[in-house]
Amino acid sequence: MEECLRGRPDAWEAFVERFAGLFSFVIDRTAAQWRLPLTAADREDLLAETFVELLQRDAAVLHSFRGNSTLATYLVVVARRLAVRSLARLAERRRIAGPAADAAEVGRDDESPARHDDREQVEVMLARLARTDPTGAEMLRLHHLEGRSYGEISRLTGVPLGSIGPTLARARQKMRERDD
Image 1 (cartoon, rainbow, N blue to C red):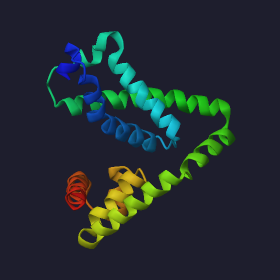
Image 2 (image 1 turned 30 degrees about the horizontal axis):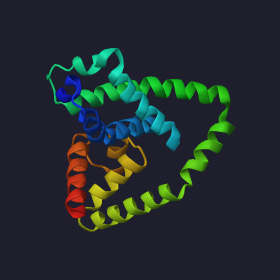
Image 3 (image 1 turned 180 degrees about the vertical axis):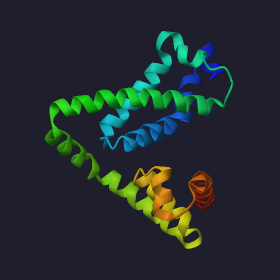
Image 4 (image 1 turned 45 degrees about the vertical axis):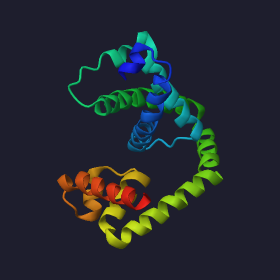
């Protein structure tokens, strides 16, 4: 981030590459919590808005980072606030346009071949994980694919609420190790 603020030529591209996935996750997770389906275009727009906001007012948001947490944690909080604001505007636009326009747009996006292929790949990875960690695989499915909250996952699986985060982290780590 310091290189971005100093204006190093390749710094912004590296910053975008490093944090785009994190911001996309925050956007998707926030939309799921709001039960607001996103099209690919919506997702890209929200991601672009996030990066634009980071650069506005001479990158004031980035200059405001004081190191009281990790940079990633700070940026998650910023991205969540921006996502909430943007999703509220999107929900209002959809409310005005009507549910028929929204359903048609979201339906087209969800049936895209790339989205179907991604879903199949995730299902294969979860099936592999389920052989050794069925609880972790189920919790990953509930949290990331269905957008369930920790409370919902706890009620559905019987796993104590305080154990949800650590169990998800271990399951994600196992998936990463198998993917390497």
